[in-house]
Length: 334
Ligand SMILES: [Zn+2]
Image (cartoon, rainbow, N blue to C red):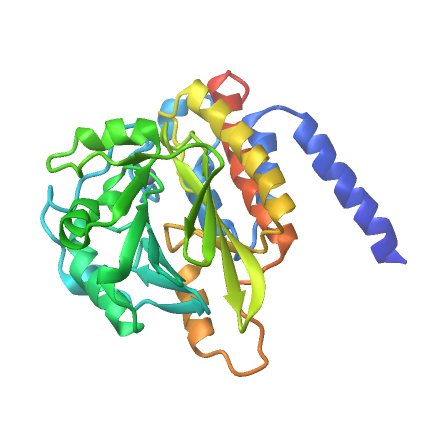
């Protein structure tokens, strides 16, 4: 009986909170949805503290490991001293029949295996290219020479740092959002301009079609992707929200874009039946721990990456509410 009373009350509370368009209310709406599938994403997308002055939340403050959003690129791998390997190295691994996580402690890239080669999503910092991408692929039985496409979620150094090296070495085609090609052109050693992504672009390689959406907010040309995956032959769809971190320095225009694109991607993900969340920072959905659980998985146990459509929706709602929180604060409604 008590459960029957509790549930409608809870729903009513959330609806009321959302109708209250303040930074505090939107952050509370995000907070109400937090779990291990999305807490890290909220940590980078939501205001760390809610207060009247957005400047109190410095983009370079603690916990803003995603690099300064809003167009200013994070330092390139080649542009700063390479940290000692033990500080960043993490072992990757297979998470689906056709999907492999190539990772450092903080960032992840994804290799989609198709019948005609590899689609790589993101490339990590340049210093991780050899150990995490090249040797990482070999360790899972894949050949880096088979990389045919690289989709770059956005032109910050923790995701595009190794693009130039991989482009020069293996000659894959590179796909980036048009605005992020402009961003990458300002790098010290930029990749050669290649394919400009279009919204809703279907990239087919062999037996696999990945769909790309332009979802500006974290950068002006951020790409989000939907990837068909298989778990012991059973089809599922993985969703990656390509740019997550926000700060007091993110412009109103970018926040509005972030909000509308998060909403849009929810509808798209729902339509495609997305039930798996992947990300490009390991903390978004506790990815390193999830990878370890995947490696320890016994026959008959569920795949830890399959979280269900409701959790994909929740993930995007959390980041949307975080952006709404920043926007309300920026509009003087803390
Ligand atoms: Zn970034």
